[in-house]
Length: 412
Image (cartoon, rainbow, N blue to C red; front, side, top):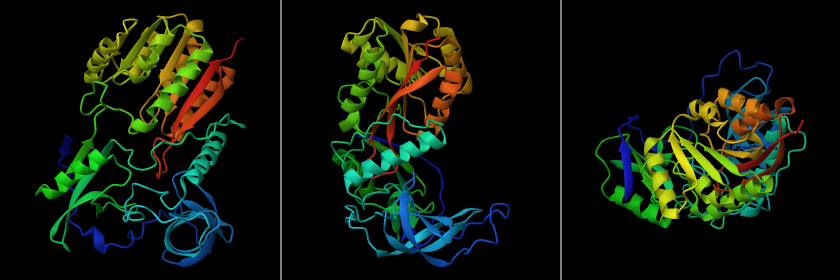
């Protein structure tokens, strides 16, 4: 069983007794006395759209109000919990006019637990909403007027797909026992969860073991994980959380790589070598770069197990390695894969790519905002153009979505 924990402390508070996040202290510079409501007011709004992040958007006297766990077209009653200059957030009190699309959530903890945002929506509607959100972000943050975003590729398993979860403990005064579960969606209290419906069955078996013998110390965090069968992977190294859709992700990367007709590959933030080893047969040579030394050792083992002798791996921060590696292969024959952390790429890494201009950049990201920021920088002054975006729903029932993007150098 893959199980690790840390000793971060949390306040001993009973999550079951909390119904609403305490009122937020608004910055006076951020609020306006001209708004038609105040903290604690109850208003009715009709939901016009679903914003990225999972909240519905309605308007009250021209002011945008964000409300969670709603569907487009619904009229809802909400209590204002946050007020800013030109928008507000509210807690859903009741759905006055439900959408015909609304369905019962599978998980009894939905709307309390912060893990899922969309269990009340049929899966095809989730996919359509996520594509619409991506188009908006690519336009608004990336500056792409007509972004070439394909339909979102759905997961073969909309439930029971996660292979890794972070479980927390918190003492409950009401039940006189340790709550084991996940943070609420609206505060730092822990919801006691017997089963996570979006997690692999093996993970829920691990969760039951923790629940049977929870730690006596408050505020412990456990990483529960189902390791991949055919990859060598250190316990704490990154790997995609949805094994069911991995073939679709690999297919997207391979199709983009083949279309560019390059012969060399640089895989930046390569982890245990997943992308470069899955594409090694398409190129003459490859190099993987990763700051995690244990992941690099695993990548070398994975390469050996697969019989790929046409590449190597370097343990180094990406921004330090890329200036040394970029000239290893001829730019016109080189593709670069970027799969950075959620914060995106370092500015000097992007500048190095802009300066040396490899033929193709394949950017993989689960954070559309930092993705679009970096894509805009790469495309600035016409250095690169965005050819295509393949979204993959690696995180069904949640606000998250993965994107694989194909950028090509513009020929002078």
